[in-house]
Image 1 (cartoon, rainbow, N blue to C red):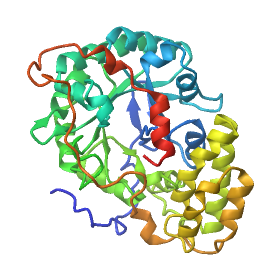
Image 2 (cartoon, rainbow, N blue to C red):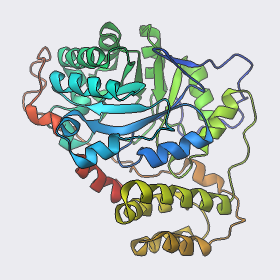
Image 3 (tube, rainbow, N blue to C red):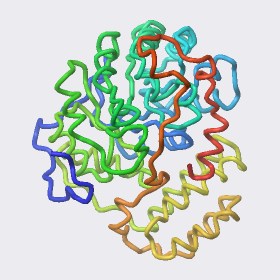
Length: 398
C-alpha cells in the first residue's frame, strides 16, 4: 500500500534487538543504516560535521562536478574538501563523460575518500536539458559506462548511485538503473521515490523502493518523506530496504540523527530541544560556516539556515524578516535573543516543508534524447554543472 502523506508513525515501536542491521556498503559497515542525502548548498563540511556529532552514519557531500574538480575550480575544490575528523569521508560526484568520472574517482581514492556516490537523480532543468542528472538513466548504456568508470577509478573504494523513479510516470527507469548498478559493480543504490517531474511534491512512492529491493542483490537505500525517526523505521519495515537516506527532514534539525540512532538501537529518543538549545546549535553551525567559507559567504549561507532553525517557533517570522540584515554572528545572536529560550520545539514544525516547494515540472531533456535509448553518450556540456550556480541558488533558499 502506498504510504499516506498525512499518516504519522509516532506509535511505531522502537527496533527490537537485532531487527535493524548495519548497512554494508562494500567494506564499510554503516551504523545506524542512515545516510545524509547530498543536497546542494547544504551538505558541505560544516553541516556534515554537525550531523556527525549527533549520531553515527554516512554523511555525503553535496554534488561535486568531475570537470570542475579536475580543472581546479576553487569553489569545487572547497566543496569537495574535508577535515581529518571526518571518517568515513563520502563524496557525491557528477559527470557525464566516463574519462572524467574515472579520473575524478581515482583522485578521490588517492585522497583517502571512503565512499563515492554518483548523482543520477538531479531534476534541475539546467542539468537535465543537457542530458545530465536524472536524464542519464534513460540511456542505460551511458549509465553503465559511467558506473563502470567510477568503479574502475575508485580502485576498491565502494561506489553507489542515487536515482529517482524516472523523469516522469511515462518514463520510469529505476529498475533498469538498479540492474545496471548491480552489473557494473556498484555497492548499493539509493532511490528517491519520486520522479524528476514531481520534484519534491506529493508523496514518495515507498512501494517502488520495495520493488527495487526485491529485484536486486545489492543493498537498496530508500529516500523520501522521512521527517521523523519513526518514519525511518516504518520505511525499513515496510519496504525491506537496507538503509534510509534523510534529506529535507534534517534541515534545521541535525539532532534528528541522534533520534535515528536511538530508535534503531531500541532506545526511546529524547524530546527535541527547546529553542535555547536550538539557538546554541545554530550558532555552532554559523561559526562553522564562517570558518569554512569566510565571514561574508558563511553568513549569507546562514540566512537560510536561520529561517529553518526558527521554523514554527513563536516570533520566528520576525527573525526571518530580519535575515537580510544578518552579517555577523552577533547579528544572529541578537535575532535569537528576541525568542523565548524555554519554548519547546513545536510539533507542527517536525513535518513542515523546508527549502523545496511543492511544485511540479515538465522535465527538460536534450532534443532527441528519447529517440535513441541505446546511445551511450551525452552532450559535452552535460559535464559542466556549475557549483557556483548551485551555491547562488542555495543562498536564495533554492
